[in-house]
Image (tube, rainbow, N blue to C red; front, side, top):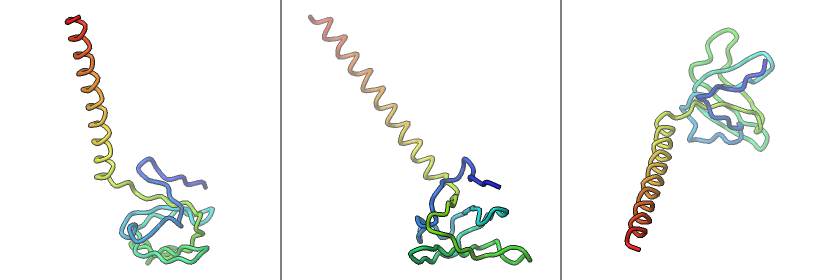
Length: 116
């Protein structure tokens, strides 16, 4: 199995995880046969490993709630819908401003051509 996340997830390495990510939804493939989906309850690290404790995963006979991942192991975090919307609106505002500036510049050039 080759899990690569979804379009609503951001790819990070386990080594990039820090306290800001506690409480966020995460998915990853800890081995060739398993894909894990859960909520990060805690993160601990050494130079080579990141230890993830997950909420909402443990309790079943085959489900673990703690995983040891190498620092370069890919994990996938759910994108923040508000942050994504804010970025989209900011980009749209920049585009609109650019177009308005272009229209104003064209009007000024047209007015200068009329006065000459």
